[in-house]
Image (cartoon, rainbow, N blue to C red; front, side):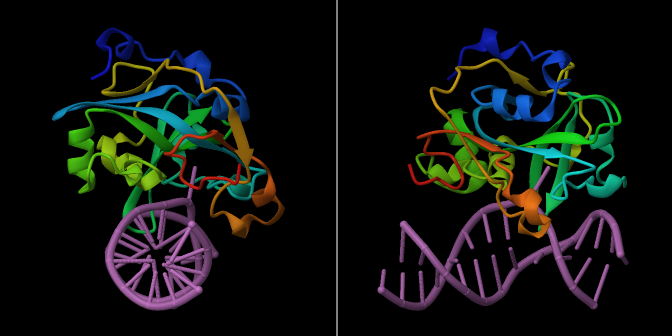
Length: 206
DNA sequence: GAATAGATTGTCT
DNA sequence: GACAATCTATTCT
């Protein structure tokens, strides 16, 4: 299990109300905590991506698009943006920057800290498998995050929040995954990950 | 290990 | 009606 005292302190809104690329990078190593009814589940963030509308054509808010789905991205920093993708998975983001700047950080992978048994049960896998949490949809399933968490304040008294955690030793960068439709924007190195961590979704050649 | 196909549904054109 | 910030099983090397 994990130390209970550290877990109870959510990062302040000021951490998220900064440029999205800074937040994406500094979120590495932080702990994503869900006080799930079946027990508190914790993962250490090891991979993120920055999305920066309206210029960034890979973002849901590209060209200033504002819809019911992406409304969270237009709001205050420190709120969750959870959306369904490919019809069957969930993806978790945190909104960053100023109100009216439709920016967010996608959490793409976590290192499961525990309890491994509960996460493994929700994933239908053995606890030792890296497939437990090495992707955006997988980590949501493992932590029990779903559409209910959209627009939840992760800086408030929510069951879902981010707390401080051990810094990564080495940080890598790469283009974002599966946004080829965004042309030149897809090639920007806006993905951040902890080098050498086995839970990074698409391991780079090192 | 790499490449591929199929699943599945809300959202937007 | 097409597509999507994916995952899994399967089929190759």
